[in-house]
Length: 188
Image (cartoon, rainbow, N blue to C red; front, side, top):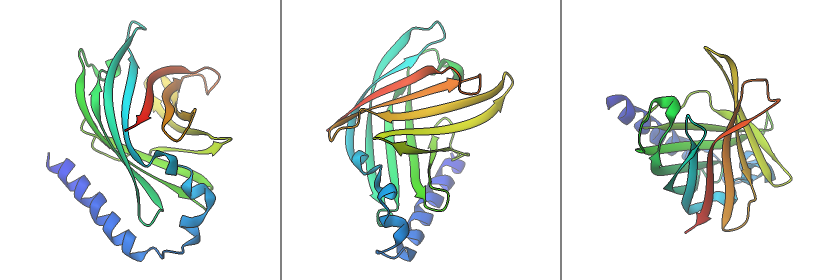
């Protein structure tokens, strides 16, 4: 519990210090790419489905609150809902409280997405990627006991009041993908 509190205090401390040092006219914050996630700012109801070990899907609900922070240089997400991840040994839905921070790095020309939650209260390596033609694709690669696994998050079908989000994995270097978590978001 102390680790969670420390991580949250660290995030809020960095946020408050950084907000004071970023000039309002910063080119970093004003590039069109730095605002590609602005569609997401607001509050959302979520209908989600999560794959189970037997290949069936469990459906649950969640809510999301998303803000622009640091004078428009980053997006902060607060997610809350019930999940049942078989890969984490869950036998029934459990409450998940999640937090993400994302920003566009103008030098790398990539978005960086970092996530933490009550099951794993560390920001980790995160996902990187970009938007192309109104669709965002973000990737994270890690080594497991079964070999290299690539995770992919896609934001698609984006409108003013809704969008589709899915998380999939590949164990064959991106040749094939298996969806494991899908969310349909509707603006409140």
